[in-house]
Structure formats: C-alpha cells, structure tokens
Image (tube, rainbow, N blue to C red):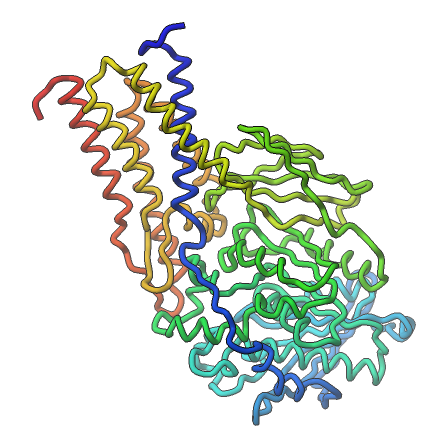
Length: 583
C-alpha cells in the first residue's frame, strides 16, 4: 500500500479525523448554558419565608361557593368550589380552588389520601382538572387551586391587571413565584382542615406542572405536612433558565435589573431549598425543555436530601407532559402511600477501552433497561441503545442516562444524565490534528501549500460560524445555532430535522474535504443551507422572546460572515493555486 493522492483508505481516515476534530471543536466551544455563576447565599434562604409560612399553617376558614356533581367513567365525582384566605405580611388575599372527590368517599374514610395540584404560569385550575378527575377515579381527594395571581385568586402588592413577571426585582414578596408558592402552602392547610372535618386523610401530597412543578419542590421544602411531591417539567437553578437563552427570558421584562434579580432569585429557586426536601419525590422532565435547562435539573437532583428520589426523563421532548407521565405518576403515588419498595436507583458501570466505552446497566428484576446517549453538543437528539450493555464512542464527549421500565410500563425510572470524561477527547483531538497534518502532507504533497492552507482555513471558518452568536441580549445570554436547537427546536417541530441535517452536513463536509472534486461544491451548498438555518434560528428566538416586548439584539447574524469569507477563500485560492488563473 502506497501513500498517494488516489489512496481512498487514507482519504477515508482523513474524513474521520476531520469529523472528530469538528465535533470536539463544537462541543468545547459551544457549552450550554453560555454564561452562569451561582450566587452563594449570605444568609439562610428560608429566613425570607419563615414569617409568612407560619401565618398560613394551621386551621383555615373557607367558604363553599358552589357544589356540582358529574359522571366520570364509572363513578360520580363532586366538584366543590372553595374560597379561602392567604396571609402575606399584613395583607390577606383570597385563593379560589376546587375540591374534587368521589361522591361515595365516606366508604373509604379510613383510607383516604389527598393531593394538591398546581397549574403552570398564566394558566388556571382548569388546566389540572383532567388530571384531578383521573386521580379521583383512582380513589384520591384532589384540591385544584387557582394559584395566587391566576384565575379567580387574588394577588398582593400589585393590581391584577399589571404584567406579573415571576420575580419582582424590588420586593421578593411581591414576586409572582413567592405568592404562588405561598398559595400552595395555604392549599395544604385547606386540605388539613377539611381532613379533620370530614375526610380523615392518611397522607397529603403535592403535584404541579411547570410553575406548579417549581411549587411542588418548594412546598415540600417549606411544609413538613407534605408526604410526597411530584414536580413535572420544572427544574432548579432558575438563573440557568435566563442565561441559556430560554423562553424564561420572555417572562422577565428586558429592563429588569438582572443582578438584583439573581439575588432575589435565591429565595425562590428550588435549587437552594433542595436539601430541605426529605420526602419521596418523582421528577418528570424533558431533555429539550425550552424553559428549564437540563443542567439545572441535574444540579438540583444532586442536592436533594431524600433517599427516595425517582426521575423520569423523556428524551427529545420539549416543555410538555405525556399521557404516560400521568400513568407513571399515579403508580408512584399508589406505591408511595402504601410504602411499597420499588426500583429507584439504576447504576451504570462504565469501562473505557480507548476509542470506545462499554456501559453496563444494572438490571433490576423483571425490568427492561436501556441507555440513551448523544454527542455532548447542545440540541442534538438522544439515541436509544436497548439492552443491558451498550458500546459507545469516546472520540468526543457524550452524554448518557439509563432507563428502567417495569413490564407493565407503570413505573419508568431513569438516572441523572452524565458526561463521559472529556479528558480522553482532548487526547483524541490532539492525535486527530497531528494525524490529519501527516496524512495531508503525505497524500497531498503535490498540491500547492497555499491552496491546502486556504481550503482548511475555509473549513475552520465554517466551524467558527456554527458556534458564533445568532442572537445576543446584553447581560442575559449569547446563543448560537446549537443553543437555539437545544431551547426551541422541538417546540417549532424542527428539532429532529434540523439537528439531523447539521450532523449529516458535518459528516458530508468532513469527507468532501478529503476529496478534491467535491469540496467546493459541498462547501458552497452547505454554507447556503447554514445561512438559511441561522436566519431561521434567529427568527425562532425573536418569536419566542416576543412576549412583553423582549427583542434580542441581532448581532447582526455575525455567524454568517465567516461563511462568506470561507467561500471567497475557497474559490479564490482554487482558481489561483490549482487552476493557475489570475483573480
């Protein structure tokens, strides 16, 4: 075998090496989120809550506003509209909710369990009524509330018709999140009150979706009457939600003082209260949530102070809840209130063997296990590897998490996503660079050195273009195309398509640069495609951030300029140093 320009084997190796180099470059230069430094609290965050929590724990006076019945499946359910007070500093506001329960509850008076449901931001109790009915069908008594500032419930310090950002940068107690959390604690007091009067609940739990999920964390941390908690599509480290360029920015007015906001955020962020949660917790989360970055979830889970933490992660899904999630939730509640022991921990044992790593998922009895993994590039899809053992590449950093499903799919538990040690990738990156230079020198030694330098510089400019900002908002975030994929791709139904296009394009480009006659055509076509995608990504950010007058700066799409320069270099150098034409 000889080293010459026609040797396809070396061309193939060169293409692989270029792909390794480009993937590692994107991973290392395009982290998510873009900027974040966690504030260390100067005092116990609970101190802010102590007084108001004490005011709202205990017997509570309530008024029944209406009482209706309806048929649900094979039972008759009662929907009892209730109004009750919430105290905050020297103010009292009304909270409105519905107590939903089976008409024949008295038959189960010695074995009744209650649960509080909290809806998402700018919604109301109707959002949770379908889930409430399903829980009542399983024999639970459910309280569904209009959280403070929503629906028919009141709000302190501000008029209801004023825009209500989640956090007030002047007074933490005037924050929407503070009052929503406090209304959750008041809801637990309402359930405790009606329990003593007529129900005799054995346990009281709390469950919420999105903003309600944040409430589920916080109520469990602040109120020791809670027996279990179920946050859905919500995560801690709320500053991540801002700095990652997610939709949460649209909920914070652009003129709000971001530094003061971070300080007040400590009293409202589940991350800082996670070590107070010592009850069973089921967290349902989606990998590409446009509000809550995955990193915030991981850090919050690691701070939890409970040995009964159950995590269900939905790969390649946005800020949404599936029907399967509700079924898993019901099974979790039933097993928890019965003190049934079930699988909560899944271990993954990893062995590194140079270019690959072998991952073995500990096999719980009668459970199906699998591993989800992806290149550690923001926005790329998770790939499922079924079975107990998975072989994964270590040529670039990868993320992975394991999943265990019970035979009936009623319990689905996952691990926290992990990243394979990137130290190996630095080695492979360096080796790939050195081997690429060697192969280029040997295979293309007849070509003009200036042409070789020009075409590989054009390739580097394309990579730079992919990681440069598409949109930026000062002091908030800097997002490139991959960050946009991470935050908005699934919501706009472009996620699988666009990320697959980008990965396919990188593969094609890598191999085209080892084949003389393809490189300029592929480079030009891909450049045009990337420019369209970048413009589209900017449009998605603009639409997603359009709430409350938020407009990210167009940089102005500076990521396009390296592509333009790369095309000029490629074509000018080709004409001058390959064709010998004057330009």
